[in-house]
Image (cartoon, rainbow, N blue to C red; front, side, top):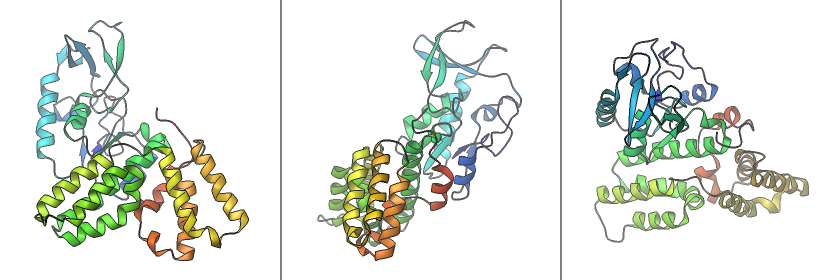
Amino acid sequence: MFSRCLGFEACRYDGAIIRDATVASILLHVEPITVCPETEIGLGVPRKPVRLVEEQGRILVLQPETGRDVTDEMTSFAERFLDEIPDVDGFLLKCRSPSCGVGHVRVYNGRSPDAGYHDGAGAFARRVTERLSALAIEDEGRLRSFDVRQHFLTKLFALARFRGAAASRRMRDLVSFHARHKFLLMVYHQTAARAMGQIVANPERLAVERVLTRYRECLHAALAKAPRRMSAVNALLHAFGYVSDGLSANEKALFLEALRRYGARQVPLAVPTSLIRSWIVRFGVDYLLDQVYFEPFPPELVSVLDSGEGRDAS
């Protein structure tokens, strides 16, 4: 699900369309559904901007230049829209927008033009995160951070693969999904990963629908937060042990330096991971060849996105 102004339609409040290279690259690998909450509730293009105002503990959506209060319209639209959308794996919304911004949106402390403000979330985005928090949800501004991008894309494509596996309602497809994601899940959340292994084993012989429900809950818990940096370092060192005997001293040094730089937040995870993956392929390490951890999303997104810019989320 995308904010419609992100390259789809000139529907921003000033009549602009936002061109973003990250969004454009992701679009090559997904089936987009778009939304513009402000136009959906009848605000035109171009339009006077709206702002969020906190008043008596309630956050209002106001259009100061016209005096219009569209809070109820926005709330009703968000609820109706989220009730009716098909299964989706994530949302990529417009940063800092009073309707779509996931964070860092100005929420004014009153209606006065010189009122102070604090950070919050857009009115529509807030309902998305409240109701669908298990999905991959970000705005395009935060994707400038390669750590945020890595987690968002990893989660997005993992959820999409699970949705595909669950659609068949066959245990063998769930077993295959878990086997291919075992390394990734252990990096993200070891406790949840072990619980998911027990669910897949299904010693109680539960019906497949019950197994899928329990597994989905654990998957959402496992992917809720990006893994700790040291978890990724330890995972790559573990994989390194499978290939190191066949490497030259220079290759070993190259990898360990890349891993050090990743630990120091100087390069994205894709740098040491790509090295390891190339050696897994060279030496045919069967245990690791099928693990999606080493290619959790389409490789084209690595070269396009992980340029080394924006180490920290803004």
